[in-house]
Amino acid sequence: MKAPVYNSKGELKEEIELSSEIFGKKLNNNLVYQVYKNLLSNQRQPLAFSKDRSEVKGGGRKPWVQKGTGRARHGSIRSPLWKGGGATFGPREKEQNIKKKINKKVRQEAIRMVLSQKLKDGEVKIIEEIKLEKPKTSTLDKIFKNIFDKKEKFPSILLIIDSKERNFSRSVKNISYIKVINAENINLIDLLNNKYLLLPKSILLTLEKK
Image: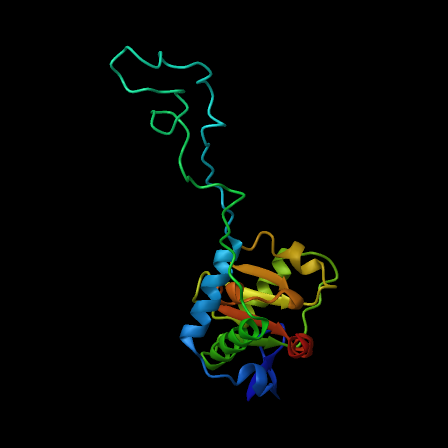
């Protein structure tokens, strides 16, 4: 599995052999969808919270006497039978568990499948190296435009870097179509939410270990 390598000017420099274990997998849509859905579910924050009858204000006194009124007996207006009373079996933030288990091997296999499909579709670009002596947005923006299709206004690029590089994160803050993540934090959601993938040549070995 060969892939071209570009320099910062967008010029083709060489072709390198990529690992078939990462970039040579056949896509299984059902597996990728299942992992993606489970990851989204695990990111959810359960915010719905209903009060039970012990948490509703008021209702300290009995609405009316037990007998003699002709009406049904009631002990408190905080009862779920009353409007404004407590909820019965309502959603409780602390008690709601929406986490779903994802096996590590399955999650990694889904990432390999997406990487393989992106390479097949021509959406993976490998660059020799990107050096930034200091955070500079215009320099990084120019590099991206040299490598990717200039006709596409917002290409949605995911740049994977080494954790030691700090200038990249600062440089792309004002570029809306770029997202930067560390190689250690590569995940299926970011891969699917961004069309293109930009990989420095030096990061390929880190991906194989990951």
